[in-house]
Length: 193
Image 1: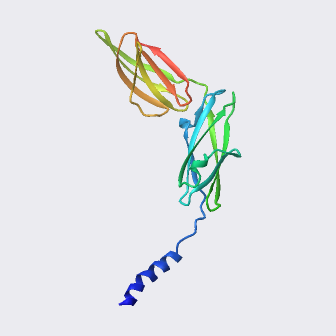
Image 2: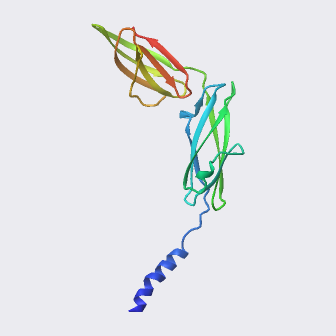
Image 3: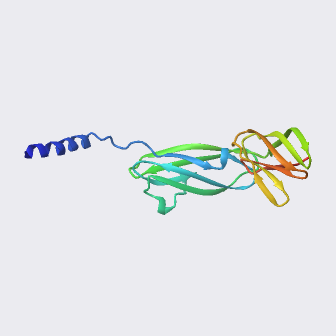
């Protein structure tokens, strides 16, 4: 009977000796700015993450440590930093991460400098009493972040996807303003009618 108790232990020992060593570097990426777009000349808040099953020990951006000490050693870590975007060209970032076992990985990320505001294209405007039904689209060279209808001091966001071109329809009173904001924070507006 004692031999039957040893078999499960032998199987567990045999399986544990077959475990693969961790040789893969941490995975990493940016979650902000949306679409990788920034407005030229502005200070930009950048956020990202790194993941490794054995724990993340370090995250550097262009050689500077950005991992908060309280995040070190966790499997999924978040980091943030600020940078000043130049007036023209691209911003190149080198993300480097190291796990607790010494595996290192690097990733180059380009941020697009977007100085162009989105365009609001009205395709059709129908009047019914004091209300207007407005149909159109918002276009941007990178990504439309949000479209909002402003009526006086109230702002009503439209529920739209975050894409380079988004179609919309809205029912608004005369004098309402459509506001469109792209991923870099550039804005444009259009009064109805």
